[in-house]
Image (cartoon, rainbow, N blue to C red; front, side, top):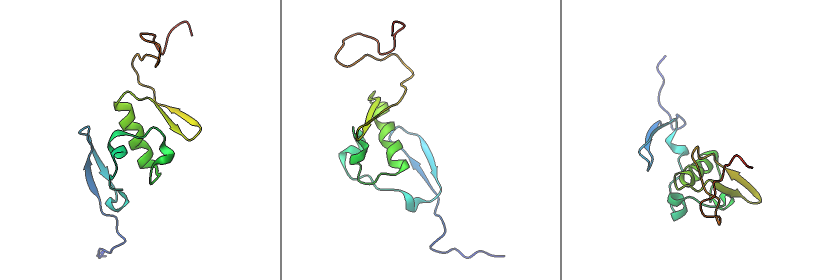
Length: 102
């Protein structure tokens, strides 16, 4: 059978992120345009995202991760992304975030 395209059919897209990675999107109609500076810099509290979706949450976490901002709030909840590298505790110059003594 021949399938006639309709407006309900998904429209695939290939998206390049600011870090150069390519992502195949199954339906481009589900993409949300980036409109505010926080969309490009990451937002410290994801509850302030204008449209909270799985994609917008992961985008905010990815942006903050690339800026070494491993802590992100979701209201009263603190989320952390493992940096897989040595980090320092803010306010304690030179002290390792992960140490054997802790």
